[in-house]
Image (cartoon, rainbow, N blue to C red; front, side, top):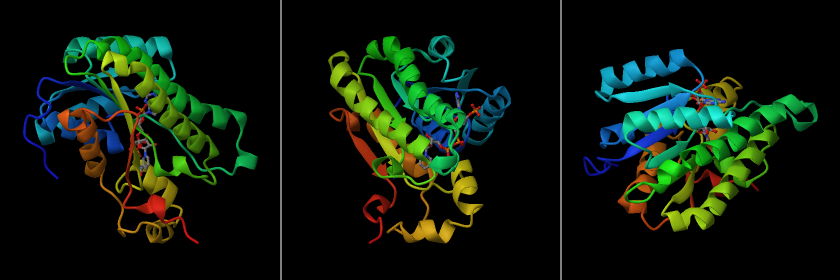
Length: 260
Ligand code: NAP
C-alpha cells in the first residue's frame, strides 16, 4: 500500500516506544511521508541507535527524548521538550507497552500492576501530556493507540495485558466523545501477530507456538510492521478525518477465527 508522497508534510508526531519493533516501522512510515517525528522511551542507548539507523537507512531526522510513560510529570516534560523540537504535536501514537505470559493464579501483584501502569496508565499519561499540543493542531489532533486483537477476548496467560488493552480501547472511545469538541480524534489499532518483533519472538516463536498461532490466522501469515504503520497513516492523515472512537483490526482476520 502506498500513500501520496508528502501526505503528512507539516505534521508533527510523537511515537512512544518508537525505537523498536512496531513503533520503529510507524516512525519510518510517518517520516517517509513528511511528518516531523519524535520518539520517547526509557533507554537512551536504544533511542540513539534507532535515530542513527533512521538517518542511515531512510534519511529521516528523528528527534528523541527519554521518558517513562508511567511518570505523569516526567512524560509531560518529555513531550513539551519534543514538541519544541518537532513543531508541536499533531499526532500521538501510544505504542509503548510491556507484557509477559503468566497464568493468573501465579501472577504477582507487582506483575499485574507493572503492565497496567505501562500500558493503561501510560496511555492515559501520554494523552494528557499531549492534550495541550493536540488542541492547537491546525487540522485537528490525532491519537492512535496500539492495542491488540486479544483485548476483545479472554487472553489466557496475559490477564494483565488483556485488561490494560481493553481499558485503552475504552479510553479512546471516551476521549473521542470528550475531545471531539477540540477537533481531536482518538482511535486504536489492534495488531495480530507481527513478525520480527520482540513480542512475537519471545511470546510465540520461542515458546514453539508459531504453527498453533498461524492456524488461527485466516490469511495464513504473520503481519508486518508496515501493515500497522499503514493503518496509523490512515488515522493520521486526511483519509481518517471523520473517524473517531473506532478500532481497526490489522490481524489477517484472526479475531473471527477463535476455533469451535
Ligand atoms: P517492543 O519492541 O517491545 O516495544 C515496546 C516499546 O515500549 C520499547 O521501545 C520500549 O522502550 C517501550 N517502553 C516499554 N515500557 C516503557 C515505559 N515504561 N515508558 C516508555 N517506553 C516504554 O514491542 P512491539 O512488539 O513492537 O509492540 C509494540 C506495540 O504493539 C505494543 O503496544 C504491543 O502491545 C502491540 N502489539 C504487538 C504485537 C506484536 O505482534 N508484536 C501484537 C499485538 C499488539 P524502552 O525499553 O526504551 O522503554
